[in-house]
Amino acid sequence: MVSKLRTAPAAAVIVAVTVLVPSCSLLPGASKGDDAREPDLGAVQKLDGRQIHFPLDAYTLSDDDLITVQRGRLAAAQACIRKFLGNVYLSDLGPQVPARTSNRYIKYLDPALVSTLGYHDLIDVQETRKGKSRPVPESYRQKAIDALFGNARSINGIPVPKGGCDAESEQQITKGVTKKLDTRLLAFQATQRTETDSRFVAVLGKWSNCMKKEGFNYKGPREAMVDPRWVQIGADGINRRPATRAEIAVAKADAGCRAEVNLYGVWVAVESAYQKRIIAKMEPQLVEAKKNDQTLLSNARAAGA
Image (tube, rainbow, N blue to C red; front, side):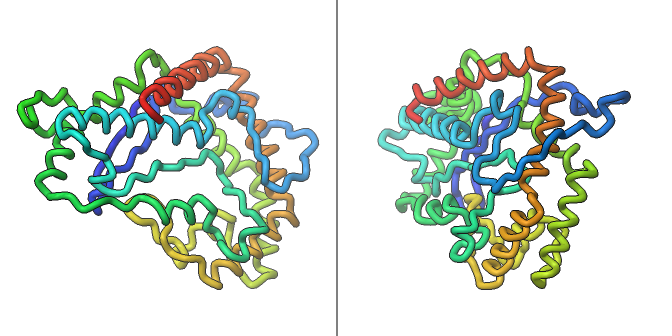
């Protein structure tokens, strides 16, 4: 697994976790033959979206687990920097907001919250109240950045490790990890197949027609959620723009239309079918990937996550 600490425009330092990608570029099942055909779905359940589970979830770090790994990286990097500068905090360089990534094609829209939050979930609201940094001299800030990224050979007479504290913290968190497979990428590839599946395309059409009846013109829910009228992503990756009346109106209609056409149910049925194909072909590699993920978590917690 490879992690990156980067400086944002406002001098914020944010951790983003990525992983090594599989050597194959095609989703297992995207090859020629029977696997190129749309899979059978069986009975499609009626789902409200609150508890969405997919087959690959059993082999993939959850969003919360990824946050734990990121926090472990932050803690390890901070401990490294303190060797050079004493009682330093990464928050001195800017707001620290772990990047919450989601592997879901469609974000759950809580009907109980849309009337006040629109498309802003609770994480967005909570994180806007965090991440303030204390004022520090620019010379001190620069030394911390040099230590983090290895921009100097030594700081205060102490040699800086190759690659800086960023590289050192990565080695600490990935110790014992031999993972060569990105299960999230496999899930994403299954999502790509889902996007073109005739059953999913059909339910998106029904959703779009439902929205038109409410006075809104969108091809799909993701288009509505990222409407530039209500999305203002800051340097820390958080949407800072408060929910407007227009956003709330669209979100309320969206939540209702999702339920009316069983969008969640069809989506889960289709994507699960493609994921099951992956598991059938790659289960040994997936089992190994899961073991390595547990090693990552253990290392992150030992680092202070």
